Length: 224
Image 1 (cartoon, rainbow, N blue to C red):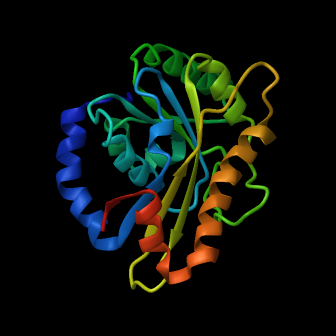
Image 2 (cartoon, rainbow, N blue to C red):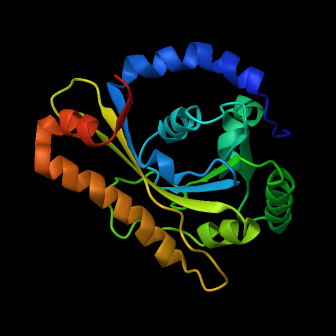
């Protein structure tokens, strides 16, 4: 199925989905939104810790120009299972197929011409606890950054925690753009994301159930 970006269709989907998400999560707390430039293509490299991750990052994306493309890169088997994802910007690929990887590369280069577009990649390839070290990034992180040499490569840490609420909250820490070049290693990008996760963990360790209040004093809360 052809992957497309239709902001009107995404908005229609969110009319129903966002209330559902708000009924399942207690809040979204973010740090470092200003690290994401508005005048460049953006490559988000994030850990993958929950089913919600793509929709959580979409909430951050909405704080910019929500009509600009929000492309998520995922395994083809996920798109095959949920075909509607292709209609809201999810691009599937098969890592075992050379032709699929070539097609993905062409897709990324073609759609990187729109300033402000986001490409979101979860280099772990599957869901793991946010506490895992090392995170286990695959080489796709470096490969994607090489396809987008002019993009701002942004490390993002996502951690889900309930604390004293019945429903979990999401903590998102956004780092400064990574310097990328031909010498960039998978480990350096992985460490950048681990740094963001460590910040969240340090806040939780320091404040415990008072983390919500402490976070709002220092950073931002999208909704609760």
